[in-house]
Image 1 (cartoon, rainbow over the protein chains, first blue to last red):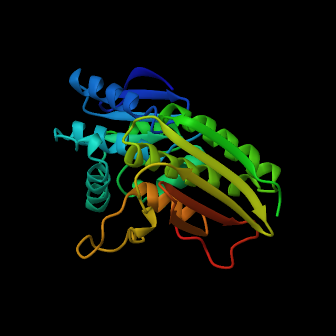
Image 2 (cartoon, one colour):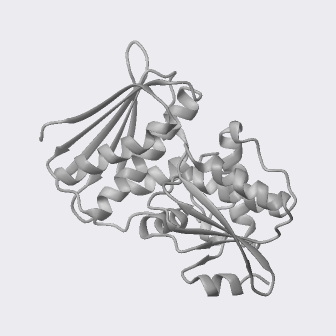
Length: 137
Length: 147
């Protein structure tokens, strides 16, 4: 999977992580690393562009959750903890929507995975990039 | 029953997940699955194989065998490994609307697997290992699939 990073400014500066390739257990740590670097560089808002991601496994959900926690200034769960990461994710999904991490353009099968796991209750999902950038306030 | 399509990976690791998904896609389509069913099977097999690699083999290379066959109106995918016993079906069905209190733990991977197929069974193999079987009907479900 390739990840490129853009800086876009709407109401606030937004870092856009553009993914190209499958987001699965062999690649999700790349996304976490890119998110961590963005946060370390001062990003407060991140948009993840999934338009070129044909497949996403549940590891992708763990990556989204980890980046959302980093943006909130919280320590993410140990990824090697297995279920612990998933349980932390469950709790965050139930805590409701956050807005510092948002998602752009998931393909149908990826959107289905987001919906089936309740992830859309935690991360706003957009089809249009301009609307996504405008949603960060 | 159709001839079984078989993928054998003696030393599977996470980087092989893409090949596993490609194999399942080809096999399912050749046995009559449409795009929706193929996508669901790919998701379920990916989640199951990831579980084997992460929790069964603890990220060390290990044997995984994936067998796909059609029986009547069912597509059946069996994943076999030599890992210590691990039964993902023992985890409770996730109800994302239920309060956390009183719920048994379970991962999103297993939840996704269950939501993509009609039946999941686990058997411990002799002398060692696991066989996870995923069954997906090719006909439209009579009830709405859980989401």
